[in-house]
Length: 203
Image (tube, rainbow, N blue to C red; front, side):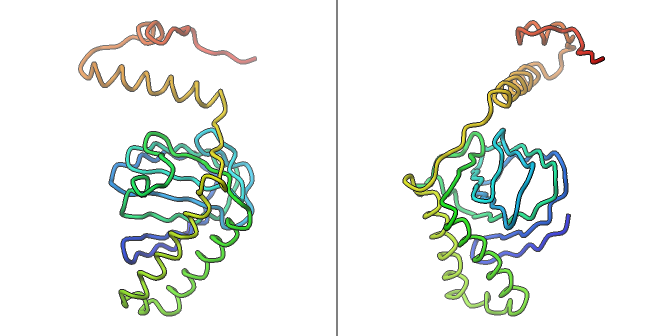
C-alpha cells in the first residue's frame, strides 16, 4: 500500500492507495479518525456497510473498525488528536459509524484533501506558520461538520449478518478475557454462545 502521510496542528492526513485486504483497527488513543473515498470505490465494506464515494467513516477512542476490501481504491484518512464526538459530532466510540453524506459535500472534501496534499508536497514550509496550519485545519473540520450534520448525513446500518458475526466475536473475546488461564473446549464455548460445535462442511 502506497501512502502519503503528514501532520500539522494536531491533524494527521493520509492519502492511501489501498489494496484488496481484510483489516481490523481498534482505536486506542484519544483521537478521531475520519475516512473518505478519494475516487471510485467498488466492493469495499466497512463494519458491515457497503462503502460508497459519498460515505464517511467516523471513529473515536474505543471504536473497532473492520474492513473487507475486495478491490483497490484510494482513501483519504484524517486523524484529529481531539475526540470530536465530544464537540457535537455523531457518537462513534463503540463501533465506527459509516455515514452517507451529501455527494456535493463529499466531493468538496475530496478536492480539499487533494489540495492540502499538493501544498504539503510543493511547499510544506507553509505549515510551519501556526496561523496557516490552523486555517487549513479549521477548513477541513468545517467540511466534515457540514457532511456530518444531522440534516445532511444518515448513518448506514450494518447488515444483519455482520451484526450477528460481531456479537459472536465479542462474546467469545469476553469469555476468553474472563478466563485467561483456563483450558477451554470448543463445546464449552459453543454452549455459551448457544450454537453448534459441529464443524461446517461444504460439498
